[in-house]
Image 1 (tube, one colour):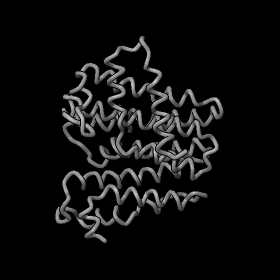
Image 2 (image 1 turned 180 degrees about the vertical axis):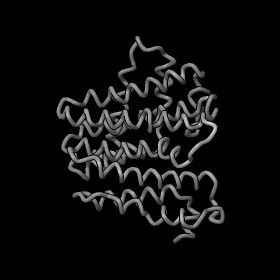
Image 3 (image 1 turned 135 degrees about the horizontal axis):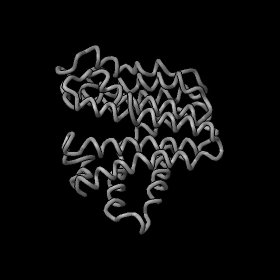
Length: 267
């Protein structure tokens, strides 16, 4: 099955567990609003790509790991949009969760998505329990403190912010988790893959910053733009049977993320 279909099906299955009378209707609706329709699903796609490159011999666990990553990402967006942080009115072209359902439901929805991410992986642990334990640990490391999503968000509450650390925790943590978890789901050593994910996270943050401020290449500093446009992060891909396909995916993502005007001039 195609990666995007695997991801969506795993997410649908996770959300269906809340489609019961016992779940408050507003919370149930807010959870679906936060997850569907999704964005590019970059992190779960990366997880499946690494799992595939390493053999993908437990696809059920890989699907669960990918879905767990996306649920954590969606939770982080719900919390990031709250009035106490960015107070964002929209997300993915629609009202943000707190604008659509109220602040209290948004807080609870974000919390519920975090719990759901771990439940998703736990339910897929029967075939490879030791691998699943490693994936759960990887997700926990990416979600909390001292260097996960929660820590990254907390830097916004400090008087002084180390920008590189802030980006590494708030953005890079899930990229590192995606590559490490993908390897773990397939029984491979996650350490070199975590390094690969950290490089990708840095490149993604650069690209995202460019998209925010620069559809004009004059605003872009040349070294940063060239690093991303030339696909430097792909040089860190560990040796594996699927290395070529994974490199192609990284190159495709780098092209998608950089504004078209900058990409044309760079070419």
